[in-house]
Amino acid sequence: MSKVLLRGGRVIDPGTGFDGIADVLIDKGRVVEVGENPSAEDAKVVDVTGKIVGPGFVDLHSHVNSIAGQRLQAMDGVTTALELEAGLLPVDRAYAKAAQEGRPINFGFSASWGMARAEVLSGRDFDADFSSSLSMLADPAWQGDSTPNQLAAWLHRLETELADGALGIGILQGYAPRSDPKEYLAVNELAARAGTPTFTHVREISEADPTTPVDGTEEAAQAAMEFGGQVHHCHVNSTSRRHIERVLGTIDKAQAHGAGITVETYPYGAGSTGIGAAFLAPERLPVWGITPQNLLLVATGERIRDAAHLAHVRETDPGATCIVEYLSEDDPRDRQLLEQTLAFPDSIVASDAFHVTWPDGTTESREWPLPPGGSTHPRTAGTFTRSIRQMVRERGYWTWLEAFRRCSWLPARVMDSTTPAFNAKGHLGAGADADVVVIDPETVTDRATYLDSTRPAQGIEQLLVNGEFVVRDGDLLPEAYPGKGLRGQPQ
Image (cartoon, rainbow, N blue to C red; front, side, top):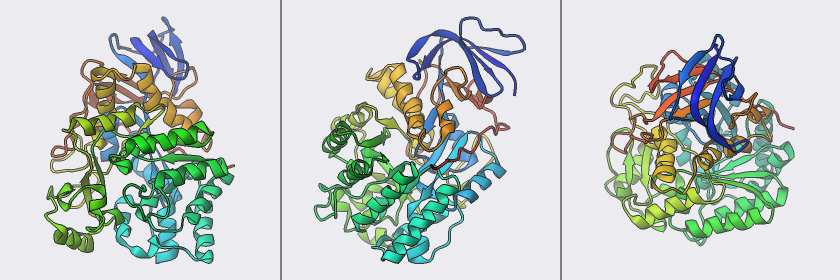
């Protein structure tokens, strides 16, 4: 691990609020000094004049869990990608597998509420594999209420996962939308006692389903207020649809009353999930204002034709990944809704990135560039560069300092309570981890589309992870695997 001097760039440090021309000296995986003309003896000097230098992006919501997917994220400026909304089980196996295979960027996992419930209620076994676990989404057995003994069993399972280093508890409440709200409160009470965050895909909001047991966002806010824990509301843009203003108002009110609730978003009008999800049942689509034709199968590019076709795919291949079009990016009103979530005070950028799938069903490759034929959601390759292009360069809603607050600083702070290692991430102060991104402010942009979803972003000139180059002069280095596992330390 060599000494590196990034010379002459515009350095942005959201930890101190610094924004100015400076040099950044890196040694032994750490930022040693940020200032004018630090000693460059024995250092590899990289001229970054005219470029933006900041802490690498921390993605709280990534399902890629693979070398191929992480390389696309690295080209998007991400230095740490965490599987927190869904989680994996068992986490000890997830960490061991990633470490054995090697990862280009840092990684970490939450304990999976959904998998723990499915173990107890459905008798399913899991091997820390996200793509294979998607088939459980169509299984109604784990989505119902728990008996007192079942509740105690899966809560205990989550406790053991936290003891094994899980970064929090991921709660796919939206995939079991009719389950007893008391169970959601119970898992948040457990997390609060352990001093660890929860990461929730909320159940349906009341506007979408007036019969829902409780409005999803209000439920998350209530849990944060009742137990004093830390609740993270995942992808508010997709779960709120066209009711974003009301949902953000609920979160704002809860925060004003002291609730520890944070929120994330991404700049796309379409989401992605397993087609067996409860909310994608043909009879449920009208409440979201979408039809079967708004669903696109990732592996084949095939658009769902009608309700009968949807029912057939859900029965025969419930784990199939699909694109869900819920807002039109061509409609100025819908674009404004998306920008409203990005502009919301302290909203965090997170990708909800998905693994790449090839026609033969594989989801991994060490080849670079990636082999042809792979498909994913374009947010895997472009969430952060797209957010910066839109919010900094085109709209002017964010300064560069604000962009790094939302992409680096704030997500790292969500993790501080459970993982002290995050104290050294999301900023560029002396002693910080050398997870650093260098950006060309004139060319930075996303290039992936729904039809060409694996095109890497452009404008990420350099990316260092733990002081080692993963992207050098705009090119990814296939031999670089400096990513480290980040494990929780529950109280």
